[in-house]
Image (cartoon, rainbow, N blue to C red):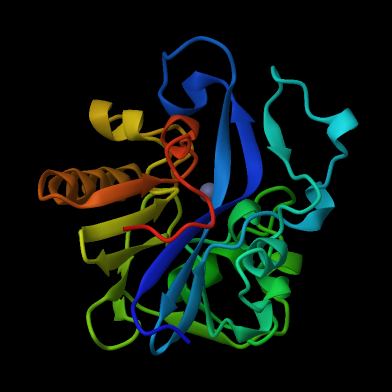
Length: 251
Ligand SMILES: [Zn+2]
């Protein structure tokens, strides 16, 4: 257990796409973005926000996805359990998994955290079960037998205001983000409600949206939070990720 709240980031996969997948009209070489997971180590317990991709996306380095192809890839050692062990955190010590949403690249590592209860928006769970689709929503990732705690709207995870789960609908029907209060200010783990900083700068939603109106309302809230000093960590932003120190506590 920790005596003070700490936040750590890890990359648990890679996501490749054309720039236009994020911001329509953008051109150029394919972008490579991370598939982030975060550890929130709180005196009252441990939570992991998103768990990356399942091992079925494994590729050998020699067989890596060509740089000009769309897709996901995962290399040995990128699973959340290995990432946690690297900083001496036992995967069995994680109390909570908070999934931003149930797309395959956000909950594929849930099974690696055997004692965690999964917190997800009820509407996301319903949506995933209705829309099961290979490569998008696959029950193997989230119907793991772990306890599920569906929620409706906001949740103050530890009851002290330091770790808040907030709905950020749009990308999917029940997407949620997390706001972690650190000494230097709030950090928002946005996940896929906003793929990259450039999306927010341009206020342009990507095409992959379940609900455009909700997505735009979410963007407006993000823009206001950022203007108020909140640091936002975006969903698949390779440019931003270059400045993130994996496995080192944020200050
Ligand atoms: Zn997604």
